[in-house]
Amino acid sequence: MVQYYPPVLDYAKVMRQYPELELVDEDEEQRLQDVEDKKKRGKGAPKKIKTKGEGRRAQRRK
Image (tube, rainbow, N blue to C red):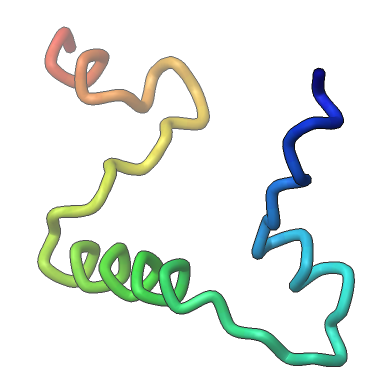
């Protein structure tokens, strides 16, 4: 039953398999640009804390 369907073409796999083709994933490039723009405006994801005492919650309790 599984062999009935053709294999799905995965763009990321093709790019890794054939780096000499120098393919560009435009969707991924656009996503990275959007993330960078959000960070510049201060709308990005917050940085992860390294220790338990560094979080906002711990600072408020002091």
